[in-house]
Length: 127
Image (cartoon, rainbow, N blue to C red; front, side, top):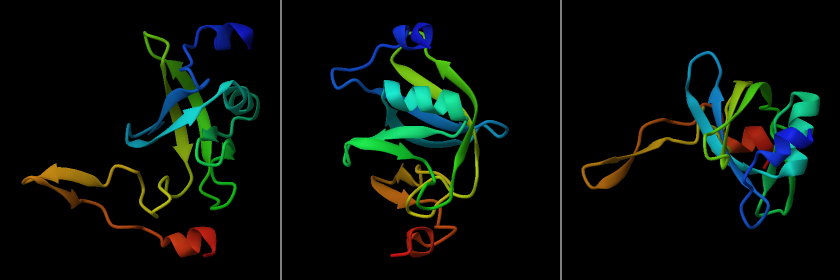
């Protein structure tokens, strides 16, 4: 594990950007942050675990919503400062209930919603 972690250029907060991509379609699902502990857990369990900056703790994707990500492969970019996670996404990836987090497009000088929620956040999180 040390060879993997030593190759990563973590930022000043000990984090690295991680992009989740559906392994079989290439769909970009989301971007989140990981720290050394979340990387170790992800590689050990095969279930993607991120680091929540707002909660200051590990965030096991899908632990509340059930919308888990199974790791297929973890890749490191040429600069060592961004991870690409090829995943098998169960359900939606976005907390808004959309398949991915990139549902706003800059069109005509404004942000336009290009994807509707597939499931309500209340259904996902019981709120």
